[in-house]
Image (cartoon, rainbow over all chains, first blue to last red; front, side, top):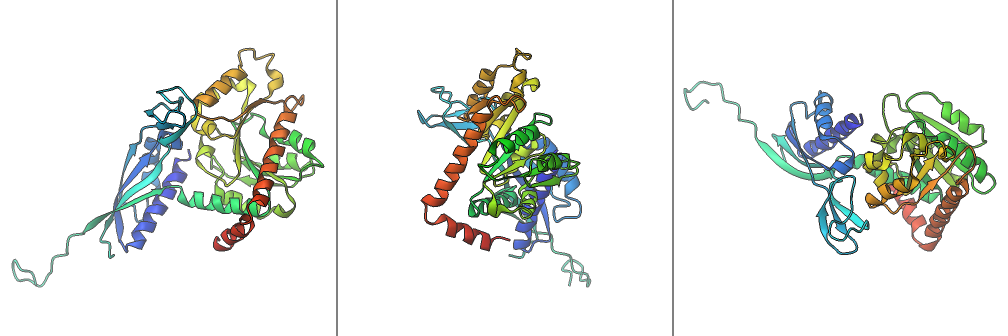
Length: 117
Length: 256
């Protein structure tokens, strides 16, 4: 599905970092994926192996980890870990909450080979 | 010279690796393009609404009805997203408003760059409301910001009332949820509008839930009322702060 588009964007971002540091290639990528980003980690990893051909990430391994979903309550201030279908405060039950974790789709770090600067 | 045996073949230095911390949104480019689109909309005082739903939920039929209802009050235009065909754009044009068709081929969602290309083919100057009808899909479009001011999610009565719980990413971000084909509620007795509302609240979303029927006109007044309020909010926002017009112009000048 849309994971291929996300893979291409990921590779673009990684190549941007590599070029900024004058690296010849990229060895490893680390990515954070929250369930509320709408991106599936397994699918991303699969489409990445297709999308990376011919780029600076052609030999780069991809490591992804899922972040937990957490909300902070605007009413009582509590932070609770919740499921994707129920983003309510677990302390007071309020639905006036803000997602503080679980929506990430973040390139955490890249491991560059022979960076010149 | 080789230090082991004295030969002239020098060993290649082993590759060195450096780990660089990045912490950047993977879709940063799309987010950037989306804020550029937003600057275009704001500079022209246009309210932009992104309509999203499963295929066949009645997005195009709702737009046809809405355009007729708004005729004489607001000048509208539509950007249509579909995998194939320009059927929807042709349907919209019959109602006398400009429509740009984006055919995405195999891509399951619109992204900000596609919308940017389309908006340059529209007379934004004379518009009040721009509707973007996304590709029929409750999953993929949710991950790609377009720069529109509000996301409106539709769930039609025949689809069943459990859509918000099944597609939380889509429904938690919606500014308004429309239960479409509401004229079928008497037939689909198991469909509960109250349950849709409960599921939306469980996603910590305060969005209003309105039952509408493009066929009978049920709830269309509430929907156009919501649109009118949003248009008024955009205009007040534009007038209220002295800066925006200038800030928008700067944003437009800086971006490609």
